[in-house]
Image (cartoon, rainbow, N blue to C red):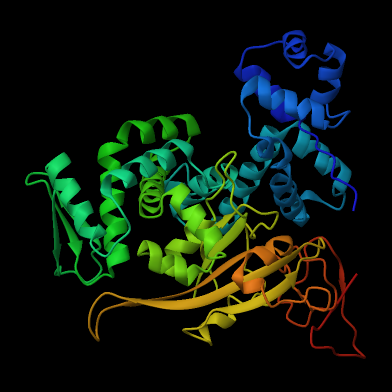
Length: 470
């Protein structure tokens, strides 16, 4: 297979603007001609290995940041959005969409936000939702969706918080059964923060902070990994307040709600990084061949926490395997999603019913495996399992989730879950992202027609799917 050409015009322009250089000055730093810089920035020519090395040396860049094409994510999102009939019959071809994602990424993201605003407004009008008239911003992205996109385009890796958590982890000490108590002692000694494990009156209470007494109450009925995580998340609001404020300010969120949600997300990010610090976690992952159960035992973490952390291992010059991770509730709604791979979850609509994450509810307590191929020809190794979270006795609420973790099949040999696979004979399940944009014509699990295609219904013949796709 021929090596993929790397076009990075937008990234090169952004780098030049960041360092306040014109094309002539950049050319001098890279020892190339100004006209060559102009061709690179307009994506008329791809980056060569020599130019990438020169960029890495001149600006201390990670080569992976140049070869990882974030425009793929924009391209997939654009194809999904533009499949909506609201854009008419003339849909931009793949070449045009690639040009937009490469050369005008900010414009492409603005189009996505505009479509999401339109979709939200249409849904509210269709259901006669009075909230639109009461809330002028109701037609725009929700706060959670705005923050989701922030993490999505940051590859779910926040470097300053990750490194701060890793440094603090060294101070707390080794990964042993008493690490939770050492974290509690650190809070008391360093911040005069009294951490109390107690059974709250409200069964849905996770943590509660009393500012007057500087007492943080943690639900004692939660599992120790969750208790550690919640203490660490609160600690982030104390130690990383300035860093988180700078990140939130730089993200350019449009609403106070989004800024609040992002601060919560950043605190949770810090908590996961403190529980599983980057360097030790990556080395342990390689040693245990990414066995999520073993990693949970080593770091005192739940399988969900381990899987989520694996999806964040994108530190420049120290990247782990690019994973995708999702959490799905019993209704099939994706409640958490992260991806460092080419695979992107549907932004709108439901998930493909052929993914094994839905079957995980039926095989509770087991990690099940799936080999899958998406319509673009990419192949993946999926893992899925389910869990039940309880916070009390018989009458206490129980939350049930299924989880999916996976990577491109080229990495399968590094995982313990791929050790016994003969990929030359393996059968891959044909899955999609969402029925509304899936191109497959012979899927018997299809729930709705693809938006970009016409359908025909025969009065003489009835198939499992009651229409044929044009």
